[in-house]
Every structure is written in structure tokens, then in C-alpha cells.
Length: 183
Image (cartoon, rainbow, N blue to C red; front, side):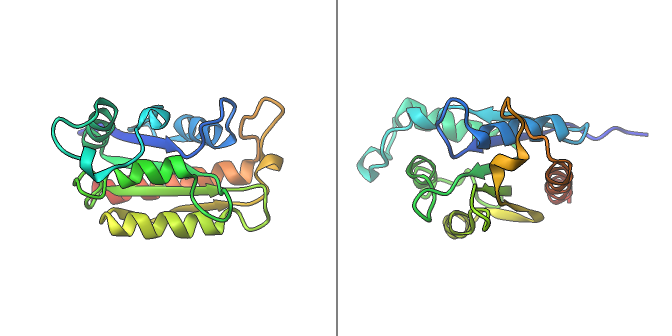
């Protein structure tokens, strides 16, 4: 029996906080991932300059080129976003703006998590993210989206995912992303 190659997933947290619950969710996802899937957290959002079309020419800013290369080298992407003022965090929107004129996300399978302390689970940020990803022609994997309401109650005192229902939902999201990539 031939083993399938390991899928490379670039995970992106929309939060820059050092003890971000959204980054913790992505770290949990890396632990819950199927055996043939490797999630690697992209940690350069804060290094990306504010988007300016006049800078979107060769040679590209180094941080932008590194971000784009990371995405080109990935089989898929998993984004976990908080909701700030009923929308995406500016730093995540800025990163996505750098991809509008390039093809790194074109038809790239994407999984989405929006998590919030609110009972709605970050529905506005989720809708904003879907809108932007549609604009760059990303392929949101069927079954690979998740809204997590009341996030703080699903983490332990160390900020790690401790809710078994949410853990199972994250596993299901990752399996859906894997199916989409392998098709």
C-alpha cells in the first residue's frame, strides 16, 4: 500500500497578541491534524508593511515575498480569525490585500475558523473573510469552516483548547480540508 504524501498547511492567526487564543486554536489544530498533514504557523503578519499598490512591484518588500512564498509552498491554508469591531482584524485584511494582485491563493483550498467570546462566534469577521477570499479566488473547502462562540469557556487556564466538542469540530474541519486537497 502506498502512503500518501504529507500535506503542508500554512496556518494563519488573525491575532498578534502574544497569548492569543486564536493562535492557541491553531496550535491545537496542529496536534489534532491527521497523520499525513503538517500545520505550520505563519508568524510574519506583523512584519508585513501596510498595503500600497505602488510597493506591489518587483522587487517586492522582503516580508511580502516571504509570505507569498510560504503560501506558494503550501497545499492548503487554515485561517483562524478573531472579530474586531464586527470585522476582520486590520492586520489580517492587510495580509490578504497583499495577495489580491498575485495568485498564491488562486484555487488554493482554505479552511476557516472564526472564534469570539460572543455567542455568535465571530459571524461578521467570518463573512468579511469569506468576501475577501472570494475576491482572490481562494477555494473555501466544503465542510472546512467553523464558528466558535464563547471561546474563553473552551480554553483551559493555560490557554489551551480543552473542550472536547470543539476539538472534534476542529478534527472534522481538518479532514474536510484534507479531502478537498487530495481530490
